[in-house]
Image (cartoon, rainbow, N blue to C red):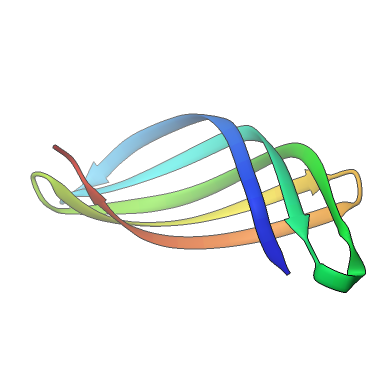
Length: 88
């Protein structure tokens, strides 16, 4: 299975909780298209909501973890992500 594309738009609210840590919530809409080889291909779109946290360990660098729940017509999806953020 391969992801052909995923494009979305989100609104995010974030608040600091001290010592470089912050929490956030987000809501958004996504459109995805996948290719499952011999099983075929297809796409779906839907709304999602999630929460996460971020630790800014230096003025321009942070680590972010997040969870998002997606509600699609053909089923639901849960995603977890961990990433590095570099601010320029």
